[in-house]
Length: 392
Image (cartoon, rainbow, N blue to C red):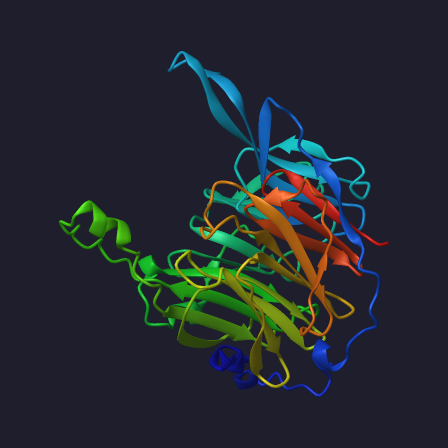
């Protein structure tokens, strides 16, 4: 993994003004606290599936997803399940959450402040200047997964088909970032999946992966007993791509490496460190790994890996603490349709991870973290639950 984080050394991010990584200056420990339920979708006529969570300020929060309920289909002449995209919004710190129907399902969201935000859907990019209570589509760009804006006008988008785009007019028009095309990988196999900047919006990283798509091998003629003993082929390394900038995206440096897993989430801090989340398939010994990025030295190290903790998001907050969230998988399959218990851990030295008690009702397949800064941290489960970390 050293090759991944050496990218920062190559970019010349060895600034004497940077604070050493959190492991070198451990902040004073504070009470563990507990995760309490702020919102629980409790309606036997429908289900709520969440896809992302943002908290741009202590008062305003936005969760995206869709509500599934039965509706009459005149073509079939019967009732069928239908999905209605929504965002859940709060303007009073989570005391009340209000559903707002929208026209397309968000894949992910980004908020610049508690008023201005964007979401990405399968069909384009949507914009709000009303804290998520009203949205309009501003672009029909396809195959995108995430956007990240440094200012209201300047932003980046990443996604499938080897796409990294830049906008200087708030997301209305986009131009390709030339550095994204440098890796010698096929567009059909290549996805840029994560983007993050530090608190100053100066230091940034985009990660991607290229996985060749091979046709399935012919099915052998075996006896039932032989077939039952067969296992899926082991996961093999594939090409990972890393784009890094130290000047707010004016210039990007590119590296590739042959590694296992996919980097699905990044969080960077101007304190001189960050976390990268690797997720693996069911046939890998571990569901996920969390790696610490030392921005001053260009080194990396694995700081969390457990067989019974499938991490799905990472978050570092100002002040030196980092959180990782996920689930306790049921059995050996991490793709089980049955949700697992939500597990959230915190560390300030990356050697000792404290597991914070979570409301017993909280189960999920995936969990997202969000924070407006400071000690206030929120989590959302895809099963329609929103949690807040409450101090003891």
